[in-house]
Length: 370
Image (cartoon, rainbow, N blue to C red; front, side, top):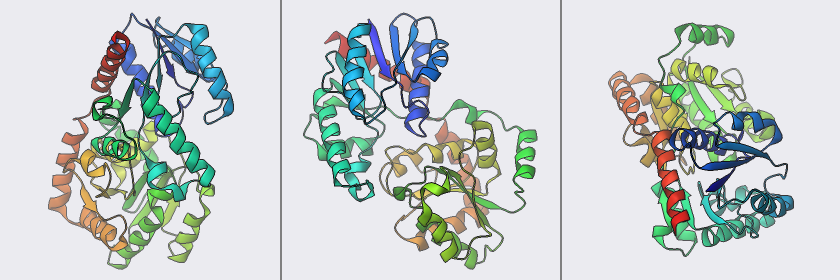
């Protein structure tokens, strides 16, 4: 059997994490099936290193382009693929082999106002409709996302399988004290700080986070700082304007993307991790923070309560006062902090990429046997 996996988004912030860990998990589970990995030419060596049964097929068609509608199906025919796994909601209509598609969330349907325009919304909805109806099996990453998919599309619930994401195992490793000291000195982290990690997009709700941070400081936490790690701030000018409006220029730092070892140190050094997103299909950063022993404050909406599993302070993401109250409790309430740390460490270990990869592999085999 030949199974193709579209890995062109290998370096994306969220989906890239999913693709990387699924590939690693499959390499550990199956050394016999031929895996054809469609990837950027620069990633070919990385893919080929996965094992003798993994073969990189360079593909330059960009995601969301007309080219991918033509070149992906042609590559599948050329390589003799029996099944294609698309880890996103784009499934080229000309695909003729069996297909499995992962739909991580319905963010574009839940919040169409965050898309560039009406045409983008029509494209997202049509692409997702085609994927859920034409694929042989739909994977998603939480029960909340499954409910959203069934809400928007009339398909049998049995067609949608929930297979949870997990954190990178490097976050579960013992802390490197020397590395933490280096990060503390390099970034002059000489004050207690809150940490946010993730994309800088509107639904991440960072403007309300900044307002809530200002409220917490005004309420007595005047030595507290806020560190935001993710995309470059230039992608979202209103966020910088929000910092100016609340007069927090000296207290909010934007550090852009950081590698794993640096990110792990930031998680461990933070007084608390705050993730007030309005919508998540899964939400990996709160789990990463838990694995590093950091108290988590996150939203009481979408999949986040499901993922947190009682190991985080849940707040109303639409109310800065609620976020500020959660921040204050996570920073100052020592009994609550100790409980959150213990629960978080246990919760992070409930998820495993190895287990998820085995479940995905079973779906592949089930589809191929039909």
